[in-house]
Image (cartoon, rainbow, N blue to C red; front, side):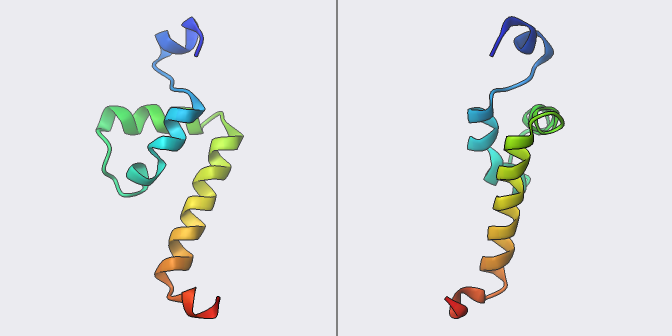
Length: 68
């Protein structure tokens, strides 16, 4: 993270990805939620990670495990 990112309160990809599951569970603080959403607003890679996590969660919740 560079100095400009630190001043803006943005986080690195590693931090955003580490918190994705808690973010999906609404188990992060409002401040962390805002930082994650800010990061996701410009980071395509992490948006992809988020979409994968959402799809995996939906797949597991659907009981599709029996299809494997």
